Length: 259
Length: 380
Image 1 (tube, each protein chain N blue to C red):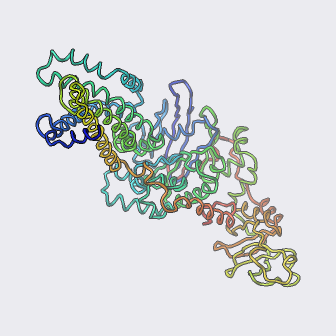
Image 2: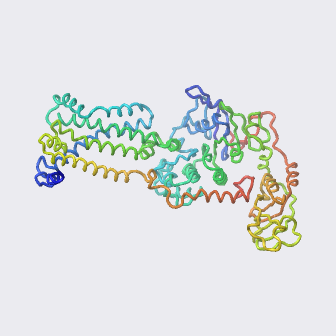
Image 3: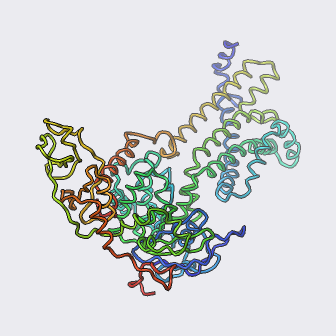
């Protein structure tokens, strides 16, 4: 089995042409990218707004519930509905992307909303108190502080979308799902397994890339990386010792004048 | 000068947090709002920079009605310090301090310079500038909070329980440095606390609020301690107020006696009495020893009794009395401003000095506002 899987993967014939791995990979990535762009355009502003204003929290719960709808069923329903209206590839593409967007929005929305919601109320209060406008509070404080959770929502969404984009092949589109669907239909198991392996590898690679991106984007002050280096811990004690020394010398009185 | 004029705040649920408050915080002074929880002190403070809008009445800054100013501009002109510092966790210490200058459009270089200057001003190591708030202790974070509030040099500061989330020793230290800083800067400050001791220590003027947001009394601390306007204020300022009032009484010339001293390593001379004062080379007191227990060897560090506090000759009567009361020998040690021994004083001598001092006179006409800081230079 492993041997035939390897020979499928290394067969030069599978690495070129319209059914070659590079083409399918590119198609798969295109679907995922389109989905993520649309999902982010919907979920990020919405999540930021819900978190910032504290209004319409129910929407987060509602979209989460939408995750329970079976994706494949939804895809067939959507393509039956939309198919006759649109022409050419769009008739397949639109319902596929729509279904994938529906899958990507909940984790993104929940992550963004939860990230903004979790910003230290004292920091938010201070941001307003020093004279930031609502927009500046969002842009300069809430968004950067929410970033770790936004990014984790994004990573979950990407993982799900990359894995689920295989279903587009069911309604005749390309992508790595092609190998799975065709391989199973033809009883060509090395091809099906090869497709599955490629999807998994792609997901891992993207996950790695996003993890790197997160490291770059998120302030070290928010992660463990920027914490407790070199003796800052002891400062309280030295301050305390100093204070002790002072109180012994200057009891009572208005201490400001004694130092 | 900050002036509250018949200010009332009623929340949508009907609670009246502040009830017809009229109060003036004089320029360059610290006005402390103090009271039990639910007395509307924080609400009052937050109405000054319009984090909360008053329901009725008006608040003015140097004669200008704050209700007519643009919120964000008003706030950029007022330093704001809150209980848990509220630092921005994703920004370095220097960037936190530079928040308001950046909002005001200062360039990066000028902001950085100003931030560094303030870091030192609030007593922090410049090396901390590139750290993030999570790397600092609570006390350090609070200092950064103060530095951030001072960054654009606002004439007015609002401080909402800034020192109550740190442990008592650090708090004491922060309070002392705050007073030192205020001596240099002379800001107009409204300071909220629930701790009457802090109020009395820091306030040039203390306003006591009662639950329901009414002003019970506003007065200078010594007046407040001497003449509480009613039972509530008397209760709130608490026990020991006679003793605490002594910290506002400068020490008169006390009948000091000279003390026989010894330095570490020396052997006590015969007949040195029950207690002998140990000093260092600069004649700064270190502690007391009992010659009888030492016998014929040199005095060691371990022999020292350090229980006694030390009073400054130019300090307050509270310091002098405490030095006498806490001294193992019953003789209170008095030093000059550089810490050098001047002499000792006995408790009954301090007490007779106390009996000779005058108390603030009671204003019979207006018990509530009678002891407030005079507004001579403000006019309006």
